[in-house]
Each structure stands twice: as C-alpha cells, then as structure tokens.
Image (cartoon, rainbow, N blue to C red; front, side):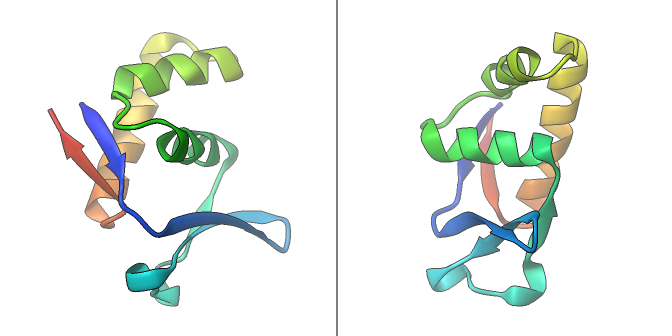
Length: 93
C-alpha cells in the first residue's frame, strides 16, 4: 500500500516528547499525537518521500532498528491504518 501524509502536519518536540500536530487547516489540539521513536521515524520518512509504500517504509525500519522485515512490515501497516483512521494519512493500494 502507498501512503501519503496529509499536508500541514508537523512533528514537534514538546517537553522531551515527539508530538504530531496539525497546523493550518488541520489545527485541532485535541488531536495531538504522542509519537514513539518508530512512529517518528516513519512519519519523518513520509514527509521526505513522495508516496512511499509500506514495504519501502518497512525496509527503512529494518535498517534503523534491530527488527525483521516481517515485524517491520506488520508494524508499519498497523501504524499507517491507525493514522488513516485519525485522518493523518491517505492510503492507496
């Protein structure tokens, strides 16, 4: 699946925690998301790469963390589906 981060979402470090917030039309402070390191890494890749696939993102995780490709792919697809539900990304197959 391909993922596209919707515009106007930024990662900010607040009090030592990475937080995804919307700005512009997306501003809604009740929907700030606390991110762990893995989620921060994936969202940063979404910001830097146009329409990456879940497979490409999973490969990046295997290079960055001590995790198998199968684990990385499962975690990546789960996170992307959660982010889609929250209106942060659009997914296409």
